[in-house]
Every structure is written in C-alpha cells, then in structure tokens.
Amino acid sequence: MAQTGPLAGRCIVVTRPRAQAAPLAAAIAAAGGEALLFPLLEIAPADDPAPLNAAADQLAAYSLAIFVSPNAVAHALPVLLAGPGWPAGLHPAAVGPGTAKALGERGIPGCLLPPQRFDSEGLLALPELAAERVGGRRVAIFRGDGGRELLADTLRARGASVDCITCYRRSGPAQGFAPLLDAWRLGRLDGIVVSSSEGLRYLVDGLPDAGRQFLAQTPLFVPHARIAEVAGTLGLARVELTEATDSGLIEGLLAYNW
Image 1 (tube, rainbow, N blue to C red):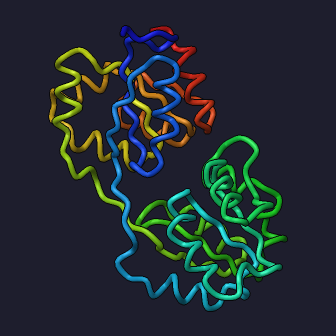
Image 2 (image 1 turned 90 degrees about the vertical axis):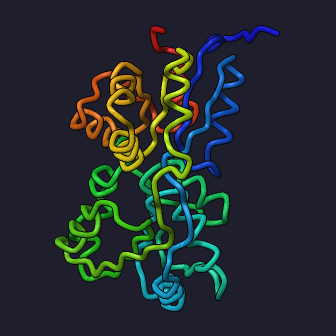
C-alpha cells in the first residue's frame, strides 16, 4: 500500500542514540514518511564508575545538580537515587526539555530549564545561575565524556564550586556510513535530523568526499541553535532550525518546502 500523509515518499534519517530514537521515528511514520535509524553516537556507561558513586555519597552537599542530556539522567539517576533519595535542598537543572522530561518521569520535578535557547548559554542566562545565586555553592554537572567546558568554567568564574561527573561515554557510529551512502546513491535520502553537535562532527569527519557532497545537498533539521552554528562552521548551509522537541522537529519537517 502506498504511503499517505504529508511526508509520504520522504526518507528522513534519525541520528539520535537508538534508545531515544523511537518516538521521533514513530511520528515520522505517522506523517507518512520513512524513518531511517542511524545513531551518530553510541552511548555506554562510563569506564570509571567511581566519580558517580562519590557524587551519590555526597549528593546532599550540592545545591544544584545539572543534567546535560537524557543520557545523563538515564545513567546517573539510578545511582544517585539508590541511597536515601533526592535531597530536599538540591535543585535540579536541565539544558533542554527532553532532559527535564526524563527527570520528571523519574520523580524529579521542578527542574530549572531555559525558556528558549536549550544549551549551556541558555542555562547560564537564567537568573538562578547568576553569580549572586551560585557564588560559594557546590554544583554537580552530570554529563558524558568530553564535551564543552563552558558551563563549568562560567559557573566557577561566578564563584561556584563545580564537580563535573562523567556518567556515560560516547563514541562514533559502530556500523560505518555505508547505509547512508547507499541511500544517497539510490536517491532515497531526503533529510537528516541531527540532535547533537558532536554527532554532526562525527558525520562530517567520517564521510568520504562523495558523502560530504551528498550531505551538503541534504537539508539538516536541528533542534538547537548551537548545532546550527556548528553546522555553519563545517560549511553546511542547508540547515533548518526547529523547536527543541519531537513535535517541533515534526513541525519543521512538515513546513519544509520539499
């Protein structure tokens, strides 16, 4: 049976980690499109569990706990909640709505969240993270290995004592790029959803020259301004910035002039 719906005949690559890709893939399918799952980042527990265990032991000493991604929530929270539970005086914060939702689903409501720009810059602009609010306080940042240091460095400059706790590690796609190249060569790859600037770098660095030429001609749908900025520095011009939710990404796909 032929596909029907506003995305009928369109193949959209979903590059989120596999554990988080299903809802967006289902929404694309519901709109008549085909979702090609191609995780740009493989997620695994941190090699060394000691920092996370140490943070769990002294969780009540922190005033603010920042989670940088749903992966940080998924890997850190079971360890953090294995003891007495979430301290009453510890305020949770998230970089984006997906992370805040993941915290809420695990019983941690009232999360600080930027109102618009969902990245480190947006979080740092909140009055709750101003120097007069965080100075002299302890802050825990739960994150993956590597990544940007802007959040930690800025909070330290504002007088906070910051611990960065690596609770998961990331690596590039294990399967290689042949599935994308094959889809491009067959003319059946119409758009790519990229939800991580690090994943985008893996994509650009890993593709051969022919693949980069295909990529330059393919619209990228990105849910964060930071990813759009990185795409520009990598020479990619066909970038569509959407709202930072599944519904926002779907709206962007539906609004695009195919």
